[in-house]
Each structure stands twice: as structure tokens, then as C-alpha cells.
Image 1 (cartoon, rainbow over the protein chains, first blue to last red):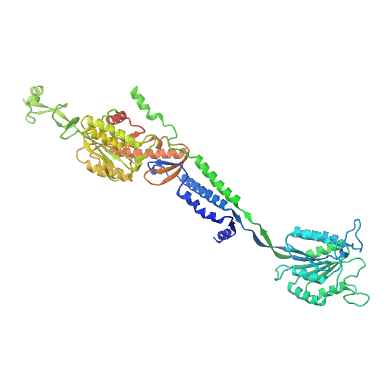
Image 2 (image 1 turned 180 degrees about the vertical axis):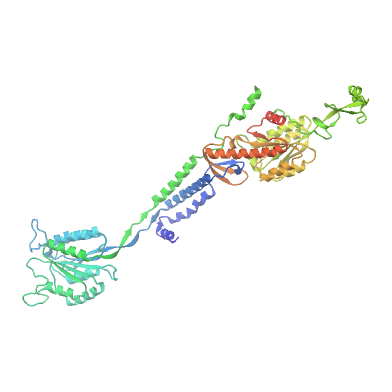
Amino acid sequence: MSAVLDLIARCGAERPALLWLLPLALLPLVAAPRRRTPLPSLSAVPADPLSRALDGALRAAACLALAGLVVGLAGPYRNGAEVTRTGIGAEISMLIDRSGSMNETFAGRQPSGAEESKAAASRRILGDFVGSRAHDLFAVTGFSTAPMLVLPMTDRHEAVRAAIRAIDRPGLDYTNVGRGLALALAQFGSGPGTASRVLLLVSDGAAVIDPRVQDALRAAFAKVRPNLYWLFLRTKGSPGIADRPAGEDTPQAAPERHLDLFFKSLGAPYRAFEAEGPEAVAAAIRQIEGLERDPIPYIERRPRRDLTGAAYAAALLGLVLLILGKLAEADLGRAPAPAATRAPERRIAA
Amino acid sequence: MSADIVYLPRWRARGPRAGAHRARETGGLGSFKDQVSFLRLPDARRIDLRATLRDPFEGVHVRRFEARMAVEVWALVDLSASMRFSGAADRMALVGALCQGLAASATRIGDGFGLIACDAGIREDLSLIATRRRASAAEAAVRIGQARPTGRSAAGLLAAAARIAGRPKLVFLISDFRWPEALLEQVFASLSFHDVVPVLLADSRETEALPEWGLLELEDLEGAGSRLVLMRPALRRRWLAQEGERMARLARLARRNGREPFRLADRFDPEALSRHLLGA
């Protein structure tokens, strides 16, 4: 019973007022649209279960036809709904560096010929990553001087791939990783998520994070608790994450090293991948994919569905049955009267 | 005018009125019955000389002749709603034709014709006390032919039977006999003193001419609702068998009272009725 109520609650009609005509569908229980043949007494007719069943079926068909027509006129539909399901995946917020250096190759030159820029390589590899698991949720954020919200958290992988395809557009110059991180964290939403959360930072350099921004970031990390992956696209010859500078060890002198230290101090699970070529990037991504294998509840959207056709089909079925019944109608005395009654007369006359 | 219906009462009529039928009484110019002694019937005009001379004891014998008496012919018409059926022929038109024939045939030979129409009670407006007046008998017969039966039962026939109790009469019980078994028994029992000719009104459309195949929405004329029937050869056979059984039951009941029922179907044939009345 509750299942039926639930079903009704999920349906609607364009013109609900017409549904007041639905009691008309009970009319066939009272009267049948058939020619009535008078008979002196029904007791002459032998009891016949088949006829009784057929009567019931035709009445039901008539009810169905009327109900189908009324419901069809009212324009029924099933509401769109969001169904929560569980799959394997993670909420992944990508934070992608759009600074100008991303348009260079891993060798630090402008790409020429078959060479691939860092942005193009990450675009290709991340694009493959997005399609590989059905139930991942992705958000894409770009950053250079200011963070750019490219795509909020979504399960539409086509849109995510389109967003990723756009990241090898010529970038701007400056790298402001602090505000980018804040926006990428904000992509997870405010509530405590049930899925595992991944913050994937793709950059080819680092910058100093303002101490005040650092405090805000610490708070945000503590609240969201993402797994942090830093895919560092290292240009050949540039300082690595672990390299200590020759001179004074300050954030200004070695921003990569100090960003790494900052990440480690956050207390969130954190891994850094240092990639010096497309293959290394692909390997790092595969590793991340392997690490993030937790169940994730995801939402499947069912669009609103028009049920008019189904209603008219039901009405048609009922009407066809009724028409068949009508065509099968017979009449008393259609058959020619037998000549037997006349025979004795002729004998007398002869 | 339809041909005469010839009928022969099964009993010797009694009564005060001279007529056309052999009677139990003697007298008049009937056919020879027997001889009795002059002392029993001192009628000098009818002394049988031959028998008187032949008698060794020298008694005087007188011939006796059967008187011819009139009988009363009654038509008891069932006006329950099932009689409204109109198939190959209109049922009440058949009843009208039959009653006109009976009225004409009875009054022509001096018999009285009476008519009682019954539904749940007696319909006085359509009934007629036995009369020898040709005009009123014919008029009553025409009236019954135009009547519109609406009754829910035929129980009035019991009252009718009580009304015509008395001397034996020739009673035509005109109905389709779609009655409950109990009523059937009661009516025949209450009429057992009379010479009852059951006239069963039938119609080829409700029996032989039933369709082999098809859907029929049948409506009961007596108000028992309607029913959908899928006609097919097997069901038709069963239907006809059931009707045949009903007919046989009625015939058994009627034979107990002396006569076979006459089946009046589709058209009224006075000669067939005469043959039935003389032969059976």
C-alpha cells in the first residue's frame, strides 16, 4: 500500500483538474455498451464460467479505456527524482596551475613540433583519469594570480573533461597558490562528507603563502579533511621539493620546499609526486587512482518522464478489446428460421 | 377468419345446457346409448319393439339416447413479463390469435368461452366470465392480444383455478411456463379436475435459431438483470439440452393430467391445434 502511495506521490499531471473525471471510469461497472437482447428468462441460459470471465474482462477493459483517456488528457508525468546510490570513487577537487610556465615543456622551452607542454600533458592524462571511474565527483579550479572557479563538484564527466581540455589555454603569469587552495577546499561544500575527499594540486611551481592565509587554510583543512596530493611538474633544472637552497633557507628562496613543509604540517594525509615528464605524470595519476578506492554515495538524477503515451496506450488496449467485443456481438434470430415448422403443413395440403 | 379449432372433451359433459358434446345425461336426439326397462323410463315414444319382442321375460324396453351438452372452454393466460418476448413472432399476438380462434370455435357450437388473465393476481380488466355471446368473446380475445404483460409472477393462476372450480371444463393453459417448479406443480394440481391443455408458447429465436458464435448481452424480461453470454457450439448444445429437459418435465407433468402440451411457436396454426386435440 505504501509503495502505491509512494508511486502516486512521485507522479503529477499537467491538468490535474481533469482527474476529477476519473470516477467516470467506474461507469462500465453499471452499464455495458452492448446491444441488449431481451430474453424471456435468464434461467434458460446455462451457467457458463467462461462467459462470466469474459464479462469481467470486458468491463475491466472499458474501465481501463476510460481511465486511460482521462489520465491521458490530464497529461501525466513522473517527477524527476534524485536517487542516492553507492559506488566506488571519491570527491576529487582539482586545483590546476594556470601560470604561464605551464605552457612550457618540461624542459622549460616553448613547445615546438612533437613536444608537449606541461599543460597539454596534464590535460591529456587528467582527461583519461576523469573517464576511468563512473562514480567519481570532480571539481575543477584554476589559479594563477587569482583563483578561478572552473567547474563546481559534479558527476558530469563530459563537463569535467571539457573543463580539463581548457587548461592548456595560455595562462597568466603569477602563481598564487594560497587562494587557489582556499577555493579548491571550498569546492567540497560545508558539511562533513561521507565520501573520501581528494584535493589534487597540479602545479609546476610554488609560491609563498601569506601567514594569515596559512592559518585560514589550516582551519579549512582541519574541517574538510581531504587527502592532499601534490603533482609537482618539475621543470628540468629547477629546484625540487626536497632541495635545500644553497643560501638562506627561507620561503622566498625555496617556495617548493616550504610549501611541502606547510602541507606536511597540516596533519592531513598528504603525498607529493614530483614528475619530470609525461610518463611520470601518468604514473603519479595511476598511483593516486589506486589509493582512492572508497565507497562513495552518489546521486543519480532521473529526469521527469511524460506518461501520456503510456496512458493512451492503456486506453487503446481497452478500446481495442471493446471493439473486438462489439464486433463479436451476435443477435438472436440472425440465423434463418428452420423450415421444420412448415413441413407438416405441406403434407396436409398434399 | 381462422379455421375452426376442433376439440373433443375428455369427459362426458353434464349440465343444464344443450350443446354439441356427448354428455353423461340421456335424452333428446343424441346417439343411441342403451335400453332400459319401461318401468325405469316410462317413455312410450321410445319403446324398442324389437328388444321388447325378443325378451323371454316379456319386459318392455325403452331406448335411451345420449344428450348433447355444452361445455365451457376457458383460456387461462399468463401475463408475466416474460410473455412480452417478441422473437420470430410477438408472443401476445400469438396468444390473441389463439384466443380468437378458441372464442370463435367455442361460441359457434354453443359452448361458452371464458378468459382469465393472470399475473401476480387476476387481471379483471382483461378477463371474461364464460359467455356464449360471440361478440363479447371475440372482443375479449382481441383485448388479450393487445395486452402488455408486466407481471413479476404467474401466481394469479392459482386464484384463477379456484375461480373455475366446479364442473369439469376444457381449460387452455396458455403460458411459456417459465415458472418456478413449485408453482408449476401447484397450478397443475389445482387444475387437475379439469381437462387441461397446456399451450406452451415458444419461439424459434430462443431455441433452434440461437446463433452458433457471438457475444450476446441477454436481458431478462422479468427483471433478473442482464448477463453476457459468449455463444459457442458447446454452450448452444447445453442450452438446447436444458430447454429440452424443461420441455420434457412440463410434458411429464401435463401427461399426468391427461394431455400433452401443445407447442405454439412462431405462428398459430389452428389445424395443428385441432390435430393435437383430437389425436393426443
